[in-house]
Image 1 (cartoon, rainbow, N blue to C red):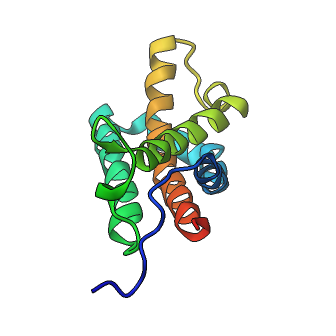
Image 2 (image 1 turned 120 degrees about the vertical axis):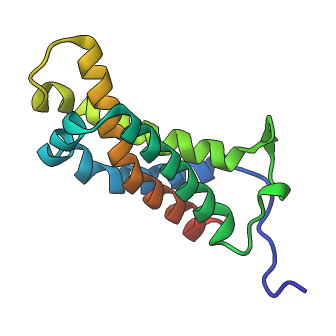
Amino acid sequence: MRLRPRRPQQFRLADSAQQMVGGFLLAGPFVVTEEVWTLARNMHILQAFVIVTIVFAIGYAALYKADATRDADDEQEVAGIPIRFISLMIVTFGSVTVLALLFGAPETFLETKETSQLVETTFKAVSVGSVFSVVGAATADTIFAK
């Protein structure tokens, strides 16, 4: 017996907009700090991939395990993956990437002009910022969902 009704299965554009508000809100302060870029510069690429995996786990848990009114099996899917989760990951990593590039963070905090080094360090910094972005995006999605 369910005590709370399930949320509607339909994923709407408004749901992505809510995720974007939360994702940008929490990503902003982290993507423009020198400490994050110093940390990223000193991280190993494998650490960044582990962080990305953790972000996926946090996102899934926040959407489908922490919220008893939502079930991944009841939602619209693409290739077996819920659209809401796909949107959450795009918003999470996209918001951090967009803010980093709009603020010119790679050029500001990295001394190298070598493209491969810029891309790798930016990826690592985005992975760090995405930890905070996913929390904001998933929280906004859960709080404001109808």
